[in-house]
Length: 311
Image 1 (cartoon, helix red, strand yellow):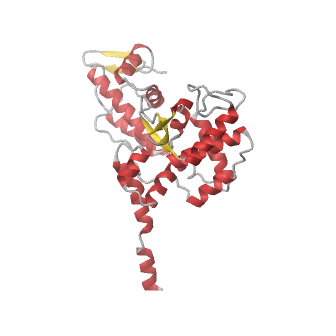
Image 2 (cartoon, one colour):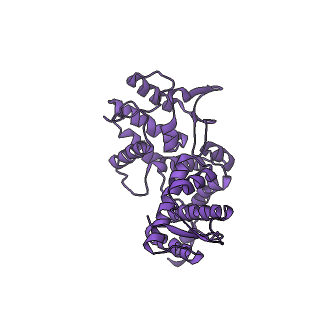
Image 3 (tube, helix red, strand yellow):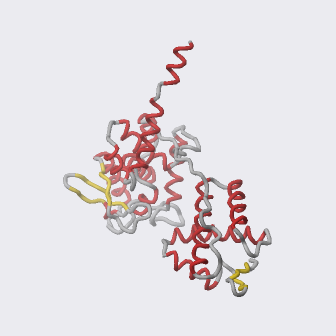
């Protein structure tokens, strides 16, 4: 990678931003989780590749804005937002350390659409998906248990992946599953498990013949990873396979659609926003309100009224 000249004011020093001590210092400054560091590393590699390809040795604010516009041509708004956030943090840090001016200050990322990118399933469609699962095999028992758990508990794939057998516990009169959610360090929250879902999980565990409480709740059956914890990618893949096999093959239907379905069907059942926020484990009720707004919009009958007046 070409070195970037960084003017500290008194003299020009040369650094290779993503290697050696400078990058180690920046990562230490972030004090972030490994996944976040991985994301920022990828983002900064792209940033400095852009500078290198353009022969930019002393980047300016205009260079950074041009970089953002180039990102918009190739990536989704969420990716652009993440990459620009990484750039802003990096140059904020270089300014604090007296290494390079903060050329990223007040530069905006991308405008994010708050509408849902994925569709949800109706109750009838969910029944069709789970009914199509062949539960005569160990894989079928496992997949069925995962599907009904995700769609009734609103679980994310990361929560399913992290779950252990010992996380199935009692809370009052109910069986619950303690989960470690996105961005969480421990399993402090739980979801209630309905009787049919618990039966599906217990049936799978009995067939699997696994009782170790520290073992993953759902294990891989692949040759390379048999018995080990399933990855989020594997969980997403099996959900997509069963959606497709049931006839629901759409880019807007994914593993996240099951969580989307759980929240949406809760609201359609008349549960209030506070209940659904708690159920979905949304940190901010504004997130829950996005679902409610989408349903209110679907119920809007203005188009029918206009059509009735005309025809």
